[in-house]
Length: 478
Image (cartoon, rainbow, N blue to C red; front, side, top):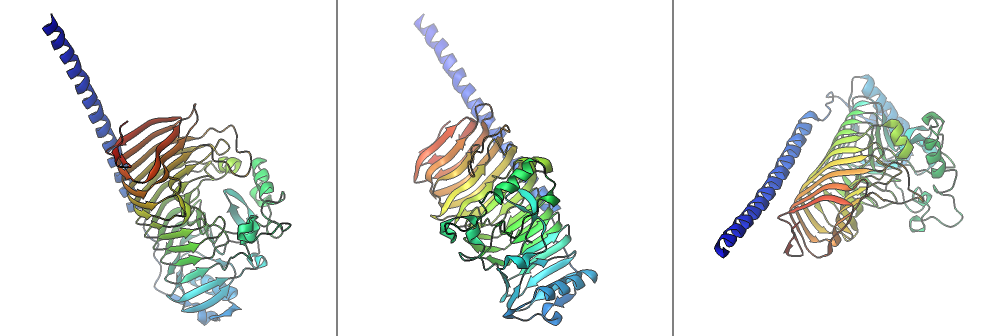
């Protein structure tokens, strides 16, 4: 009797172990298949995006009257050279070595603005120099405002290249104090973007669906312009340049397609100094870049609240390769202006490290933003140090007052593999979803995280998987 019972128990145990092994193998195989498909999809996107080509003719701005003395206003000379280049079928507008003062530079079709090594464009800090107002965007809301410092509107085959420098000359005496923070030079009693007739009014106009052409701001409203903005453009290249001292976001492709940002160095620590912010854009490649910023290094966006839902265009097929991130709120971030949604983000072969880097991989939204964030793939990343978390997925991101609404967001499918972290800060994973809309499908595969206070802090997360993952020297099991 006992022998029969023991045999029965052994059979049950064998079946249980076999079932567990089979299930684990199935999950592992399924995860591998999904990951493999994702990276194959990335390769297809890479093949679709080719850099723009230009006619082999050069238009030297000096021949149009420009002077490299750092004093002369060269705005009209840039304009003449760019227009002549475009009318002649395109080519290169050359900025030779030297310092050239200018206000807004507007690109035309088939023009490559090329800065020689040692060339520097010093942009005016007088807001009146950025008139007439143009169709642009502030934190995910479209409006009429000061021109971005470099601006292309509905253009094809445009580029800003070369080893020169774009210097916004922003500091705590101009542009930056408009943010309303004493840290950046604002003083009590001075105007700022936070005054009721400024940022708050713009958001309210969008909520009331006021036409964009009637959202007129500019002088007296203290909303800072973006540095480089490509609005509804196709085939854009930004390559090898250095960007410093920006008034606001540095590189902002909006409603654009086929964008390559390659070998760019960004060093700007002002307020909202995001490095690169693709918004409502498709097929964006950011590679070989260095980010040292006052906000997110890379922040993928798709409109704010009602304005994002009005446009109803997601950002998709965003690739980040071989980049280095130092200071910033996030290394690679999605949000918070995200109401159109984001799909298919690929990050590989990057290095992130700084005591001033808050989060390596960050997703932020709330119930006023809503939308779906899906398919975020990360591999082969080295992280030296972060303050708060390696991965943070937050559906309750809260700035600028009440952020509660009726648009419950969704976050699904986040994969990190082959990631090494020397100092993980407070959390390996910090994730918070809604009970009715949990954060779904987070996978850590072959991830090693050292010196982290807590393995994870999660709330309403569904299907969190650890595969061959070690935290603080211990193998983590589901």
